[in-house]
Image 1 (cartoon, rainbow, N blue to C red):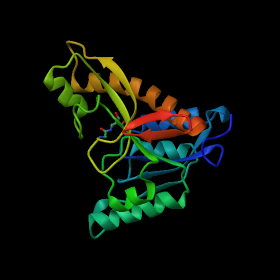
Image 2: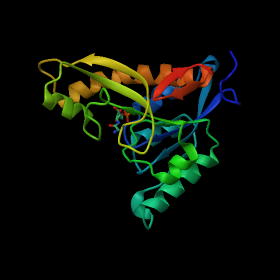
Image 3: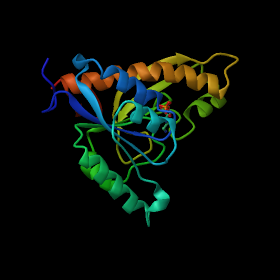
Length: 209
Ligand code: GAR
């Protein structure tokens, strides 16, 4: 099947802040040429995280931009955008990246940058999706893949996956259940975006040209 992007495999840059299990799922999927996408670089906002070790083990180049190493948030955002641009991505994937990207980044990659969030948007945006869902007492929650815009987890929705909340869940057990479903959703959706392309009309994201 031809790629929806000019290059096959499509080039993915993945941004991470933590354990990197979502990154690992993409690295594993892209070993199959039929997947249609390949992780060409991994960027982070901090050192010493397992996600960077995963990239290094896979032989994928990495870069790190810590906010505190830049005079202000705008120059951090600009440096991040420059490193991502240098890897010439077709699609940027935020996979557990715990920073909001800014205007410079969105000028460069708006419309071709997706983020995965561990809740069913529009419920429970922000950094504490599983904890907020548990505290609210919902019976189902899940994960949402969306196209990044200037808001906090507000962009057009690419895919959602639902998981039950169990009576004896802790934040950790709930988040682990979400992450299992989330990885599957991420791999499936990013692969389809790469192979089929996608359109966004009135917030509706559809696969295909
Ligand atoms: C994932 O559940 C992701 O949705 C979440 O962090 C986890 C990263 O796991 N992201 C956010 O909460 C962003 N607001 P991983 O490092 O193992 O891929």
